[in-house]
Length: 294
Image (cartoon, rainbow, N blue to C red):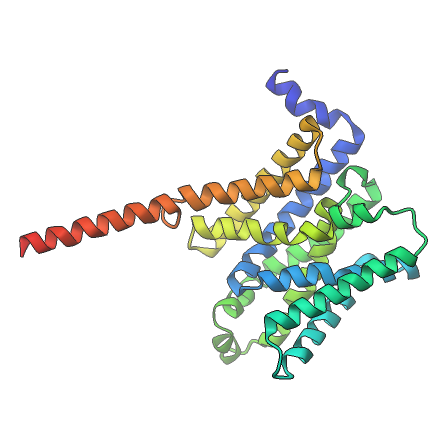
């Protein structure tokens, strides 16, 4: 099989074409949000919110409401519960996050088990990108445009909030409002990524691209570009691999992104493993030169 057939053959199938379109959209918006999650140290919070939206999505399905509405309500409820448990003073934040998101996730599984539906539980847990319809694609696209627009328009405020909330408040911004807005964007992005990798692996698409970009560059705007590039490369490569190797699309996407992170961890010029070893050797050599000169 030549390269052209390798690349074109999946696109001749309607379900694969829809899968590629929705994957590109989801990968781009997840990569944008990933940068702020990494800077804020919200990786565990991203994991919690992506799991906690499950009961909201199920309840929205039951009542015929948009999935995004249920996801946002569930996400805000999860944040409120985490804050309430943490403020008790007896339970640490990481334990509070673990308690709340596992309980809400389990509640979502219970709702799924008692709700008549044609949806397979595995599709919710691990994604069903090959089964998306064009209506699903449009829903994902609308949510992605909303999230991307908010992130790009408010990017300066979000960056200031990520690096120094105190200074952000001093210049007239409202850190709590910015944090709540980011949490809402996180909930909407989780709904977008559910179609691709499911609830279990959503956090990978929300953390890996930004972490990889963080290893490659110190500047935020290039970090956004690198994060989107890594996410798109990983998801598209993963989809091609899943088609030709006949493996799980969601799993292939996350494994591919993980491989890209591993490559950046080893070969990144400044912060990669080899780069740090080279910098230490140069520093040691310079110190020895100074000692010999003195």
